Image 1 (spheres, one colour):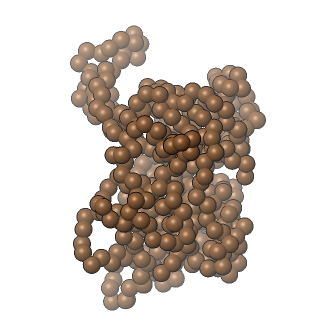
Image 2 (cartoon, rainbow, N blue to C red; image 1 turned 45 degrees about the horizontal axis):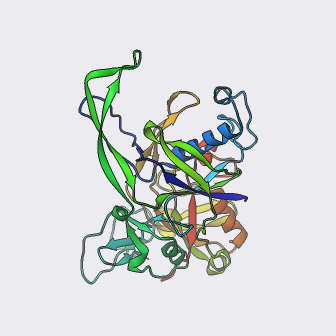
Image 3 (cartoon, rainbow, N blue to C red; image 1 turned 120 degrees about the vertical axis):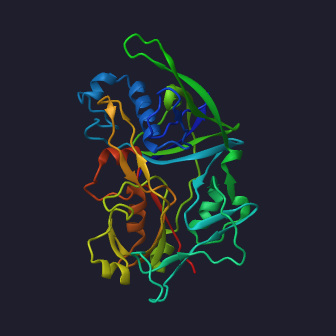
Length: 380
């Protein structure tokens, strides 16, 4: 696919809010970093419409079919393929990835890796898959939080190689959160309401830190966008980014792989990705969940899935909240044993199209950048 990359540089603090209501007296609004991909997709699409001098009201009503964005009801070729924190140094932009769930970070040391193990039948558990992700440690330690994998670290993960300590970055070295006080407004008179003070977090990025994006189906031009709560500014600069790339040929020859979500996943089967076929609980427990998507066939035999989250947002076209949906967080890892028909082209198509069926369960959410993934080697 024709891809274009860009760097979003903050011009102010950013206010990326979660899905919990706030604004009442004494309420608290926590910040998210990075934001859900729908936030950045909306900002970029608004910038494209403004660049092409499209009437935003007419577009929202579905009266304008943009040549790249389509309409709100029927999205066009535009897809947000990647959204990650990134840092710009000496004219180069390095994306940072959510730490895959099969890596357990610790302070000052290389992360430990989970290994799928087929446990003895006498060790009964509620796990529905035949293998369990097991962490073998000689010394027990508490896992660290707020960690990100560098581009070099992600390339090593894709190749099935061990991750070095310096390839894991703490978010405290990338951005800080600040507490701000807000005042609720009367909707009709647009004045401050008495006694309606609330608190919220904002994100203050360190110098050179912003967001790296990659889109399919649209060209990008330099501009300033309104991003997140309160319309904070960001400079969008088209720039080449060296994104980590799987070795599809090697994965096809190996006959097995790991799959990691690089954006939240909204799946029909809950925590199992789209592409999983119906099967009995006993068949799944003994052989794994059957998977078939974009020519990739196999079975999911093990999974490391963090606690789920809720995705919502605000629909500007309809001027109403989007439905709240359960989502699998970015970083979730699935181990797959592939069928003999697996090919490099099928694996490449899976990564480029994302975890959506050919008919696409939700074209709008696909355009917004959900269900994106990468595939990597599964080495013992």
